[in-house]
Length: 572
Image 1 (cartoon, rainbow, N blue to C red):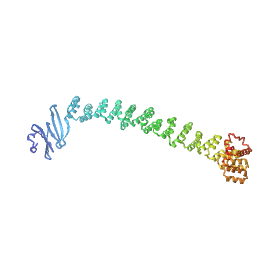
Image 2: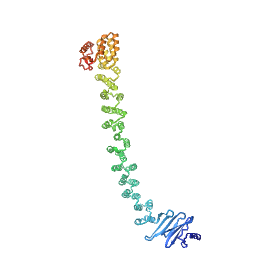
Image 3: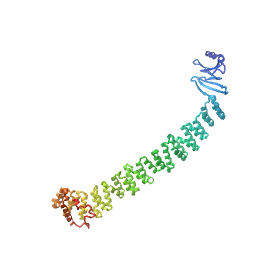
Image 4: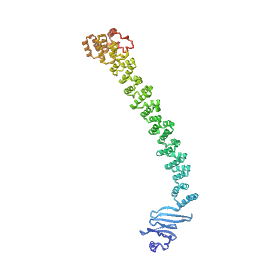
């Protein structure tokens, strides 16, 4: 130190005797510090050479030094009662203690020398060591035994848990993780334990993690990657017993059953269908071809249309008659309903009638008839159509008539024509014209050719078609059959138009027979009570008795063919 500097320092009231080696920091560019004894007390004087200011602080250190550019002050001393050297560092501007170096270095030295008992004794006594810093330093150097002692003393249970894992002290790691209460710590425990096949301890950590949906997928991937499927399933099964179990656990367990243990899946979804992410599990079931389970999930999800569609598309596996019949009650989509009908026609035709009865109120019967006609399976729906024919639907009537015609069932055909009038009569007559059976040729034109006039009149009356009746009357006029003409005018009077009857009366000369029609038209409703009516009916029947023979056909009042009883009193 130069004399000029010493003279300058005296300006700060520092005694000359203090200017000796060990008392003055001589490296200073901005700061200089001087140790000075004043009245048996030691103080340090910090001088700022730039702004010419000084600061005094009392100290117990043996020596002092300051950073040449920054206001960092280091003090070195000895603790007399422990015979221990200490070093403290301060920022004189912020008045902050930066670190206590000697105690920390002593702890580090004990650890590196494997004097763990001495280190433990030191850290349990009064000290200023930064145990966290030394612990982290030792951990990086893989001194896990020493580090765990320091972490336990702090305590830092997260770091302590990791040390136990590194030392393969898994039971202690679990206990430390419980105290740490950190998901990150549990994840590390689970990962390490799975990696080293410590599945018992991994299970404990896993139970903590799966309660948090955000970590569930990661846990599943870890176990699946290691092929620990049974252990994973067991983990999730145990997780269901926790009151914090969430929908993710139920769903993922169902997925695991679907992928690895399908025998358990159906019972599982029956029990927990209301706690599952149904859509997600359905997709897995379909990928794994577990179609019965997929159908059940659709039903529980109120997706009845999709349930039925799945059954139809995968009927060999998914079709169960009882379940199917229960589901179709709730189907609302018309296209799906008719797809079901097509499915039954193709794969279960014998039960088609039962299906149609179940869906009776939902079926578009016209569409049904059109569909079945295309596949030439009309007999399959005959019984059903007969059940609903009371609705008098044109397509139903025509289809039944076609079936009866094909089967030569003239009795059923006559009944259908008589009771249900919504059908294309011209088409039916055309089909009957060349039929091989006489009974099936009970149309107007055919009866005229075969002189079955009573049958012709009966068919004309049932048809309610004025064209047919007029053609029949014209025929009777041409062959001059007055009795048949008279009967036709009476029986079909409500079908004919008066102007037509007047025309034929004047052109044909059958005035007397035509008058029968006008009498019938002008007769009051109570005429049926007049005894003269019965006499008139008697004469009419008597006249008709001279008509040509009807090919062996007789017409007693109780004949099964005179089913319309058209010559009895109820028609007059």
